[in-house]
Image 1 (cartoon, rainbow, N blue to C red):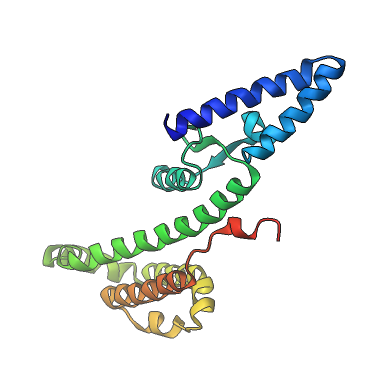
Image 2 (cartoon, rainbow, N blue to C red; image 1 turned 180 degrees about the vertical axis):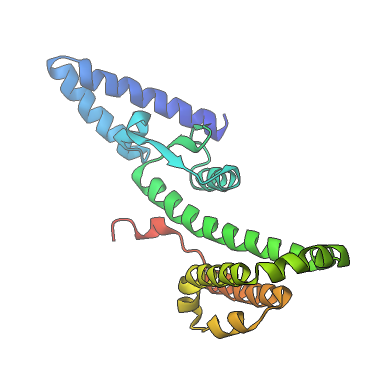
Length: 221
């Protein structure tokens, strides 16, 4: 008998005892309640294990890639849980301990995925940089228009820099780095990209150094 078949046999008997405990009469009901509690304790089960709807969870993911991560996290915590994918979420059955573990683990690895995706894009642009530099035709075509609209271009560049700086504030606080002067003074997109790639690598290292610690060990403490 496989482990899964043995578990199903145990669960089936537990459900029968639960049914007697809920629907029996007088002494039969009382005896069934005692037998049910003893049986659960013997096999390390809880009432919510016998009634899965008590443990029904719907966990929302950002998109398909994050949903793949979420599903792997769920199955790493409870490999036997039933699960169903929807367009934006995964429905599964987890007790409170496993649910807390899944949320903590998913939070960690979804952040790591975001950082590694950003590194991949930066590396991709850097590797193929010659194809992203404007050629002579593009420079000639747009030079006159840029002169004519220089004031507008400057304003747009300033607005872009401000937006970039706002987006960097949290990361700068973590790294304790002041990059405002560097970015404003540099008009070289590749230098800025290289600087951002270095900073993304440092951010990833901070996250990697933190390491993932199983959350379930903290339950009840």
